[in-house]
Amino acid sequence: MTVKRREVQPIYENTFHRRHHRRWWVLLGLIVVALIAGFGWTQWQAHQKRQLANYPIRGVTVNQDSGYLDYQQLAKHVQFVYLQATSGATYTDDDFSDNYSRSQGASVKVGVAHTFSFTTSANRQYRHFHTTVGQNTGTLPIMVAVNYYGKYNSSNVDMAKQGQKLKKLVSELEWYHQGVIILATQQVLTQFVRPVLPAQDYWVTGGKLAGHSAQVKLIAYDTDGSVTQNGQSLPVVRSVFNGNQHAWQKFAAN
Image (tube, rainbow, N blue to C red; front, side):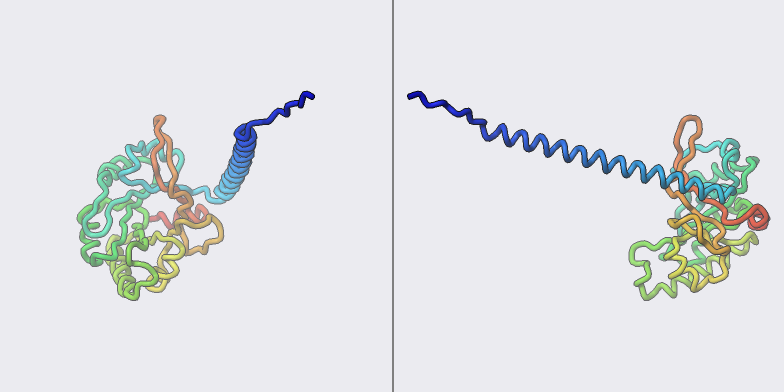
């Protein structure tokens, strides 16, 4: 009697099919996630665009990383520009002088920026700023950026002393008679800045566009923004003025 031989599939063939199907499910899952993420990003951009319509007065902050900007061209799209000038008691932005010179004559309001240092005195920071910019401070309030870094944060018991240093620096910068605005996140403003400068104008970064008090004059809504000039994408920080045209004219009156 002849016994019919049963065909036996090699075990590695079944394993191959299972792995093959698993890869397809993983790929399909990744495609679905990408589609959902893309849809979410598109919706967020649309929401951001709708919100931006409520803030027609817009501007940018530039520094040496922004490259060569045509300010006449820039003035067609924004109403103000802040130029990074100094940081602490020694650092100077390499392109400040050139940026300031080229911004003159463009139909755009100009301001200058200093980054506050916790490690150097207010007087040294002011002297460095004054030596660097001279009278080239534009017409907008001088911006002082304040960021936590290293050991300087809300858990440091010496931050009260640092707050007095910031207050002194702002007082010295008032010599220019054009006002001072403090740029910081909402957290830094609440924990560090507001206790020593409760009546100061503020510039919020890293937060939402809407829902700010009138004390918040500017809102940095895109810290990784860019402008395109001559086919090049140049990095800038994008901000808006938190108010109407009348309030803007008062803010930029200097």
